[in-house]
Image 1 (tube, rainbow over the protein chains, first blue to last red):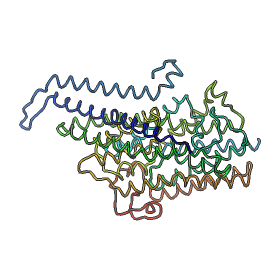
Image 2 (image 1 turned 90 degrees about the vertical axis):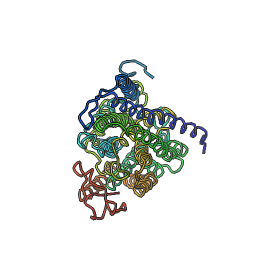
Image 3 (image 1 turned 120 degrees about the horizontal axis):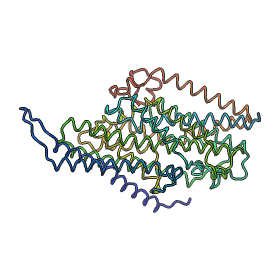
Image 4 (image 1 turned 180 degrees about the vertical axis):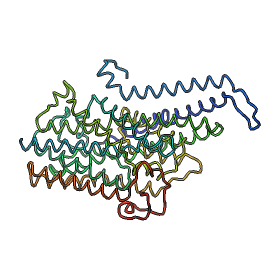
Length: 93
Length: 406
């Protein structure tokens, strides 16, 4: 047997870190965006009073959604980068 | 028609069949959470996943021609056959390996067990390789490093990531109004599930394309040189992408049910956290030196999301049976592969190929018949999970509950 255990540990740590960064970090960022979006929107209270949302929160929310959407687009490009290189000759990664 | 060409044709049909089972076996990996939380209607979810698998399959340009090298020693680095194996023997190894994989995929589907299709294929090939060549034909290091260790680690990694994500998402979203939560988490789930589907199409359809390419190389009608020059023949790509998409569209409802309802009662935030964890790990792992199975990652994520949500319970009994299923996937598929090889090789030639093909079709028909006795479909996939009918055998033999549980 010729198994490099250090290599396996190394790979595991890398996958875990990348997973936490993108797999947990992005949904957290997205949820933060939802919270700001909520804070920035017009609210109606139980008695029917309308409260205006905070402008800054709304715009920050849009920015966050744009970042998350960009991450998803990068994900799609990453899945397809070999095909893009093959058909269009553009090396993305 | 020569015997060898005849064997090749049956082999290609079987490979496409495997690809089809691969499709419906893995629909749940991407879509079970979205279906369980109601983010997507069952039929819409499988249709979306099928389209993305089809697109993913067609995007495959760098085909896994060396698909068998991680477990078998019958191919060289560029995909050609090593010397010392004749064409018919090589074709029987691949043929029998596929049969072992298909039978295990169907059995686990009947039991509603999400098990890795790649493991089933590898197991079948290992069994056939052992039967044909003996222990020297197996790449033991590759088996441990590329198949067994990742399988043990992936649910832990995916589970941890999903648990952290779930915990955070719940903490952050508590004060968000219900309407915003609903639309936000729906978008989150659909996007992450779509990424998993697309990645699945590109990754898994390639494996079957690689197997078919290997069979053509063994037969002598294609060379590894030709593949490097011109890529795969288009008909292989069309067949494989189509088969995996069709399989996905048929929907492995039994497995979707186990993943979406059996392990954890999933809510929308959990669905998004689980699928985001799965997507991130599936996309990054192969590039970071550890290719993980979609099934293991998706299942680990769903369990993790049950661990991460305060007050949520994981049905560890179901998870345990699933883990047991994973452990026996390689040996069981190997037995299927070895037996198929012995039968086929003993009879030999075209007749041998016909016999094992007919056996496969008969077994598949029987398993399908058993599944119809206790049908799970788009209509009852989300029915309440009945804990009283535990035990893997219940699904197969018992008629205790209307909807099978694992």
